[in-house]
Length: 121
Image 1: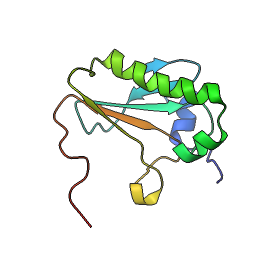
Image 2: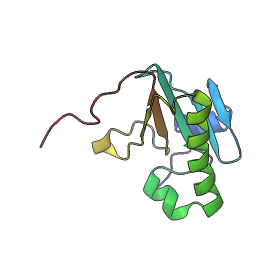
Image 3: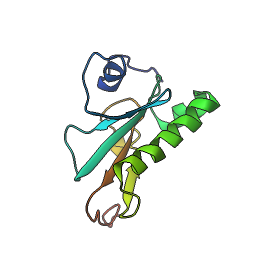
Image 4: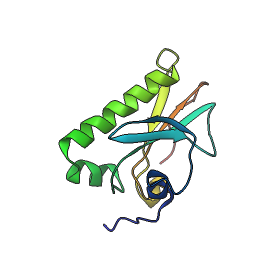
């Protein structure tokens, strides 16, 4: 797997493209999605060149993996969505419709989200 250093999230991490930042620490950056699918729609990306969760968990140092997961929880708490509920989603690859080849977790909240996937085969 060859990481694309020109993908939009890599450029956001380098400060070349602005974002509406929610949270940042040594391990992660969280920002509002520019095309929200729910009243709350925040993306959390790890700092580093990781395309997918498989790539990340196979190659990232343990402190980055733990710090990234903790950052996702911290962002959910800061958004105030724990009591009403929220959904985490990480798409990987073409069949899952991953649009940006940099690992990212979506946090959706702010309304009833319905079934995760429609019935299918």
